Length: 571
Image (tube, rainbow, N blue to C red; front, side, top):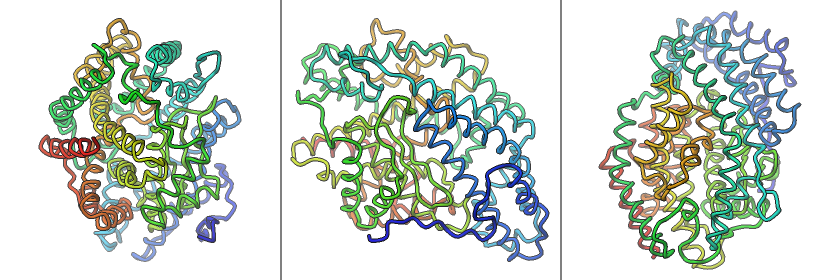
C-alpha cells in the first residue's frame, strides 16, 4: 500500500473549518430545522446534510474523549471534554429531538426505500418515544460524573520490589511461577483498589440515583427497563437474559470447574487461590508474544495481512496516521477501546499493553472493531454505522478466534503457539460466566435502586458465587471478593453494556467453527455482515455472517462442546 494518507470526505454542507462552539453550530441546526422539504429527493438530501453535521460533531467529541483518556492528569483535556458535555450536548439534544420529529412527520417518509431505512426509522421512533426534556440536564451530569471513574482509576499504581507499576503492568506478576510473588502482587493490587473503595461507592450511588431518575422521567419503573428500550434491544428481553444466565450456569460453569480441578492438580495445590488462576500450568514463565507497543502494532499488521492483505493495510494506515496508543503508563485511563472517527472513516485504538498474551488478544479484539469501522465508513448515513453492541462485539470477538491461525506472527515456536491458543480458548469460556455475573448484577442494581453499598456488595458476592466465583477459594478474602465489581469500567461508564459480550462470544465461536471448515467462505460472510453496519435487523446481520442469533441452552451446549474439543486437540 503506497498511499498511507487518510483523506477525509469533502464536506458539502457544513463549513470546512467549522468551530465546535455553540455560536457556530446553532445556525446549522436552525437551517436543518426550518428547511422546506418538498420531495423524497429533498428528504434524502436533508438526511445526508444532517448526517454530515452529526459525523463532524461525533469526531470532535471522540478526540476530546481520546485525549482525556490518554492523559487523565491533564486538566485542560478534562475541561475540553467537559465543555462539550456541558455546553454543546445539552443545547443540541432538544433540537435533535425536533429534527427527529421533522423527519418522522415528513409527508415523504413512506417514499423512502423502506428496506434500506427500516432500522433507521425504527430507531428514530424509539428515540422520540424516550425523549424527555427534563432528562437533558441529567444526561449532562451523568456524562461529567462518569468521567470521574477514569480520573480515579487512572491514578492507581502500586510498588512492587521498590518499582512503581500501573495495575495493568503489575498484573503480569500474577503469571509468575513463584507462588509467593503472585500472592504478593495480587494482595498489593487489591489493597490499592480498596483505598478508593468508598470514593467509588459514593460515585456509583450518585450514578444510580441519576439513572433511576432518568427512567422515572421517561415513564419507566426502573432504569433496567428504560435501558432495554434505549439500547434498542428489539430482539430479546430481560427474561431472555435470565434464561441465558441459567444456560451459562448449567453448561459452562461445570466445564470451567473441571478445568479448575485440572489446574489444581497440575500446580500440585489442594486449593486454588485467586492468585493461582493466571499462572501457566506448564510450570513455564508467562508467554511474551511481543516486546513493546511498536512491536505489538507491527506484528498485528503482519497477522492481519496473513488473514487477508487488505485487512493488514487498514492497520498499517492507522499506524501511519498515529491512530494507536497502546502502552500502559501512569495517568492513563484503564481498559481498551476502538473509537470510530465518524468523519475520517478510520478508528483510534486505545489500550494498556504490559507485553502479555492478554494484550495480544486485546489488540486483535480492537483490531476487529477497527476493521468494522473501515468497512462501514462509506455508508450513506452516519447513523447506519451505529451498530448495536451485539454486532460490534461479534466483529471483535470473531477476530480474536480467526486470527489464531496466524499467531505464528507473534510466536516463533510451535510449543508457545499451542500454549497461547489453549490459553485463549480457556479465556473464551471464562468470558461467559463473568459476563453473566456483571449482567445479572446490573439487573439487581437497577431493579433495587434503593439499595446501599453494603447491599450491593452482598448481592455481588451471591451472584459471583453462583457462577463459580472465578473457581478459586476466597476464604479470608471477604473485602477484595466483595469489591471485585469496581474494576469493571462498564458499570460506571456504559451501564447495561455487557450481556452483548456473551451473545457475541457465542456468535464468534460459530463464525470460527465455520472458519475451521471453510476459511474463505466464512471470512467472506463475516466481512459481508460487518459491511452492513446497522442497515439490517440484528438477526439478518448474524445470518449474513453465516450464523444464528441464538443463545438458548442447546446452542450454548453445542458451541461449548466445540471449544472443548478444539482445546483437547491442542493437547
